[in-house]
Image 1 (cartoon, rainbow, N blue to C red):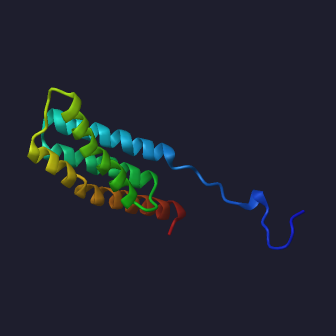
Image 2 (image 1 turned 90 degrees about the vertical axis):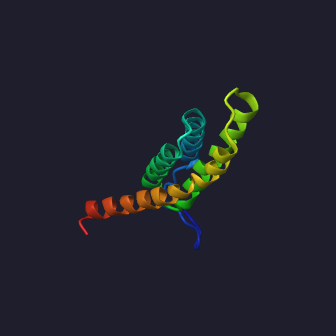
Length: 126
């Protein structure tokens, strides 16, 4: 029996942890940074950022800006790691472009979040 003002533990909504999605965002950012170093095509890098942020926004639509930050932070870090340990050295323009590559991710994350809400409304018949 619970006292007045307390809730029963069974009545709490089940909250799912977001750490697997942050891990997916980190892996996506690292893969995108590696592709940017290896291929050196800014449009392809932007496409990968948009696709990964859209997927994450679709899977977890709440606060879509966090996926842009999570994916975008690992692109320059991967390029820094490539500069320090690899024989393939990114150019100065490539490093600056890696910071700008996260901007298209805003459209992807919010587009995925919007798509999730549209699908939810269609399922409910609204």
